[in-house]
Length: 405
Image (cartoon, rainbow, N blue to C red; front, side, top):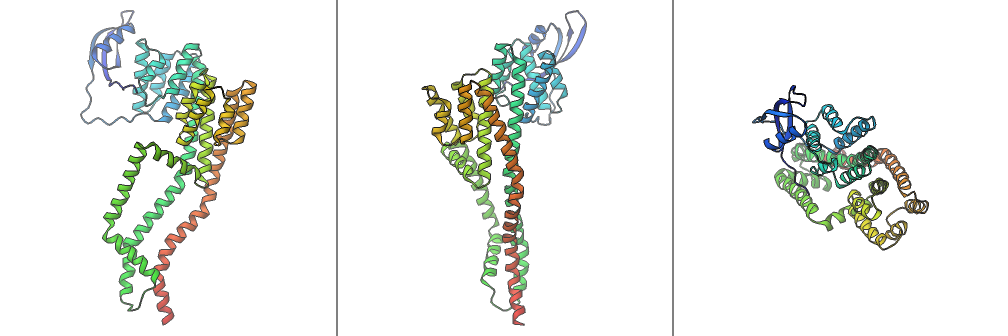
């Protein structure tokens, strides 16, 4: 992975090609490079000074994926309108309200003005521009179809981000409800149950077993809340570290997620949609199928499918047709395999894969919309059992006392 070069902002005064005085700012790694870049732009720099950075400068947030998608769309639109590439960078930078994105665009502009190709300038920022983005831009530059390639990248990024938002929405709702239930339960056990315990102490009667159990849980949480909190923090930290370091653990988690009722099918369809969209985009850009499979594997977002795609690549490299290799994995739905087969027979694999992506993206959208109505009764029952159970446990002794009276 390429190392991101630290840059600085320099203010300059000089004269342009016509000898007229001009001023401005330029971003560069050093003073010497800043002067060299100005000369390449036809400016004779007379005074160049690095702008001092504030001692307590606000941290500039790096661009997000959706910012990159918007940048690709803006660039595609302006190139389609006939605006030169370098001028398009200026317009995009001025139109962005995020300092990190403006800085990134100006850095790319400086590199392009210095003689670098657009794809080479993008490769200096691997965190924002992945291999797929850079390779497609390079293919567009080589074929002279940069405008069309930017349009394709913009569409791909927009579809990918839309799909990610839908899947996050599907995962967020039940997770948020579980978190709220845990917080409410903890509050009841720590603050409410002790009040009832004080009240029950004056009854002089034996408490129901369920009530004793809840009071015991309350006492434990009051006395050892730090231990419970420590277990949660330590478990979360261990999970994150293991997830980062162990590929086998990540594969197990991905496999488990695909088997979760309701959520699993949504994730499964999302992976298939990403597979089809990425392969369609790379194949239509002229990237050979075998080379495209590596990019597709990295973009699918699930290690189970990633392993299967690498196996498919190996089989295709030995002469097996793509649809046959996909069928052997028993992961891809019948519809997908059949449409890939039709695309291979007709020589229109890219357009057929694009249709597959459209179908499954729409299915994900429909499934996410229906998820809320499906989960609402389940969540209501869950909250009723947990919260209602605590309330019933506290009122059982009162009901028992009423029966005695």
